[in-house]
Length: 314
Image (cartoon, rainbow, N blue to C red; front, side):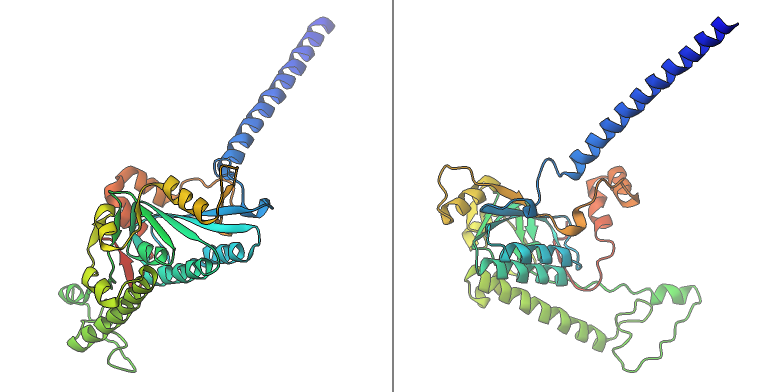
């Protein structure tokens, strides 16, 4: 009996030891995966290097209006003595006018003291073009969709539908224009004129930004700014971009500006604080995008964009 008990206890001990090793191996494996993902493909933060370097900032997807962390990161990089230039990698159809304007101003302040080069991917249009124009050099692929200089304000009107359902909405306002952005109120001719005035003013600001950044007259920019997109090959002929090429071409331009030879010179990702998380399981929006595919993903991405937008409509 004792021999059987001892054999049983020995087997249990061996099983527990094996279990501990297996659990340890799993923990080590998932830890390595998390570190790899959270490390952004082996990239290091601009805060972790203390010798002269270029920072690389990627602007991808829809430009949101809340860009505070990105603006803060650009400000810190601009003020850092060891940061010598900015490589701005843009792949975006645009987005909120306010977000594009804030990023435009941040890039403009950076470009006033250090060289900035932009490399455009599939798209660098509307608000994404707006934030790019302060750069001294813009590089686009021949097939890049860029330009699309314009402003859009969409105002749903459900008042007629509510009426057919027998639902009435009364708005008690302090002025005739106060409810003209409310989708439950019918848009009046005066309200349309007021909203058109807002769009026109925002459009004028956009035109001024492009004219200043690209060293063009406002008349020239307005002649190009009916909202249409241009390919990179068309845009270079119109003065909207400077060079056809990829990110390597933008890096080469920066190296020439900084008089960097063949020596190793780091290009370090500039990572805004809000993106420094470990690993984020895909949420409902990411799952929907994966299921529906690219045709509907831009619609999902635009969720939450309020007010006037500068975005390429595809």
